[in-house]
Length: 111
Image 1: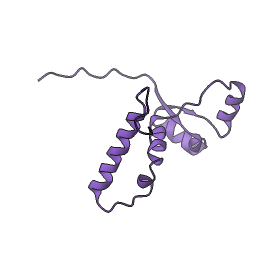
Image 2 (image 1 turned 180 degrees about the vertical axis):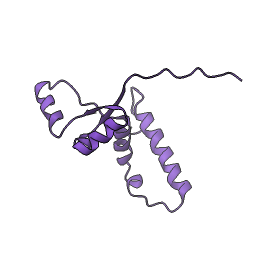
Image 3 (image 1 turned 30 degrees about the vertical axis):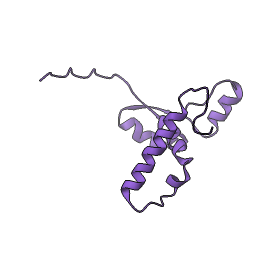
Image 4 (image 1 turned 135 degrees about the horizontal axis):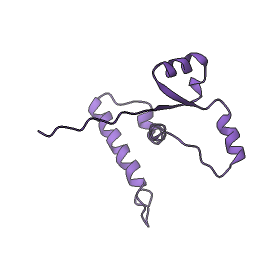
């Protein structure tokens, strides 16, 4: 058995959060747990976009993935009774999303 090396000690732990965590109680909890908060207030992102219109907003991978899956209406509202059917549709949606990301000369999904 090979022993794993111990993980390096992190000096700073950063936490990026959305505007829902701008209040004093939330910031207090974040700092109590030893994180450095990076929280953008409401409208702050819009003001930054006005200053530099070429800069794109950073989105978390999870938020983007949720928006991609929400485009599949059958998954958005769960109509399936069986878990295996719902899981199969999720796998199908994930494969379609991945296939759409492949650069091809001809779009094989839409013709």
